[in-house]
Amino acid sequence: MTVNLRKEYFRFALLFLCSLCILRAQPTYNALSRTWRVQSPYGTGTIFSIDVDGREYWVTAAHILTGAKGKPYGRITDKTVELQLLNPGGAGVQWLPVKFSVLQPPNDVDIVVLVPTALLLDGSNNTSPPATSDGLLFGGPCEFMGYALGGGWRAKMGGGSFWMPFIKHCTISGTDSESRMWILDGINNPGFSGGPVFLGTGNDLKFAAVISGYYLEPTEVMKGNAAQLALNVPKDFVNVNSGFIIAYDISHAVDLVKKNPLGPKRPAK
Image (cartoon, rainbow, N blue to C red; front, side):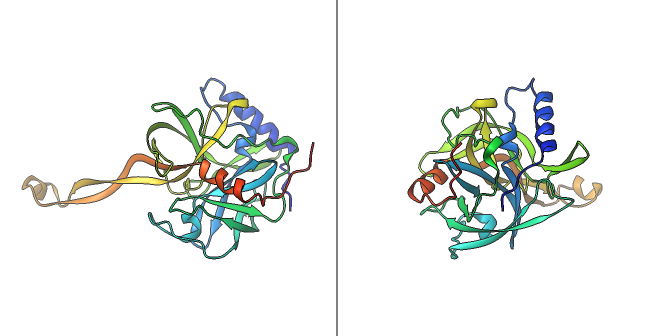
């Protein structure tokens, strides 16, 4: 089952990118069209495709398949899984059942590589961005994409409509070099999990990391009416989004597929 995105989607992507030309970084057509919504028995998130050595692979966050709420992310015990992918050009919400073989890092990393039995993307006009974090700089800009707010948004073009991921800005704030994990400054929302962190645009765009989640921060809140608050009643704490995002380096995925070159191969051009 190869999904060949319609010409209207391609034309829309070109117009969309032209409208963003004043930005210092923007997603290209090949990055947008490789970022889809995914659904497992535990909920929905984001999945994206990379080509390594001419073979197609799909990457997402491991917790989407295990249901984990944080570390440890858990292990996927089955060698194959069936997930639902949202058809970008489908009428309304049209889920495509797809079977994948599972590749997982040996350590507790929130990344899983999924190998389809056959090519899912038509690669004739869809060259894969490089999968590398080379060029990430502390304090430097980056962006991430995904299907938050219960899904993406519908782009209308040429009499058709297409699902598109939301795009958000972030900054490289820190890193954990031992686990090859990046800490980003930005606001992540449920649904972005598994989505790509990217930097650059045009021929320089690259997929650098995979969104995992965000750090929670306890914040003081007060209960009661105005009179009670004036008496300085005891306070409670709730956990809120701290604005720091957890993202695992794409090298975890690349290392896996280099050791297990199982992806369906694209025909030579």
